[in-house]
Length: 207
Image (cartoon, rainbow, N blue to C red; front, side):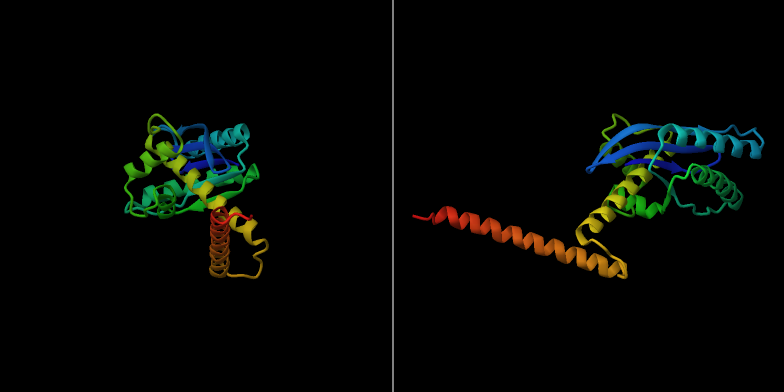
């Protein structure tokens, strides 16, 4: 699976493309789309849209993962970022690339395992998971890679549950997870009994 992670903005749009196969990551490329402060805002949006379209056409991702937008105390900045995010989503829609959203809390929990992790912890764990020599710069790029990792972990978990349980139609998420963990427990117990029987057979070989 090839995933394009996006950290939306209008001055800087961080992006990162990774491949996730059999629980292993491979970095394909990463970078940032930038627009100068003096450029008319509608032209900044146009540049973001055009460069996003080029990225999508170049890497053909199976999915695009975007961090959800939360308004800061500066509503003007929040509205501008929302407009930039809109053209990013439009570019993906035009290229028929499925889009997934994750909150900052979900990204932290997925990458670090702790929802209250600070930015540097997330960036360092991102570097380690992707086997990079240094944390990518600018920070927006590292954040985009973290979002991509979050989607990889999420899609991997969903795929595992789907393969294990088969059809989950008509079941609540809570029931699906309960069935999933029950099956895991039963499999673990089965393996434990098999190991115990193997040990017992070695101790008491047949004549």
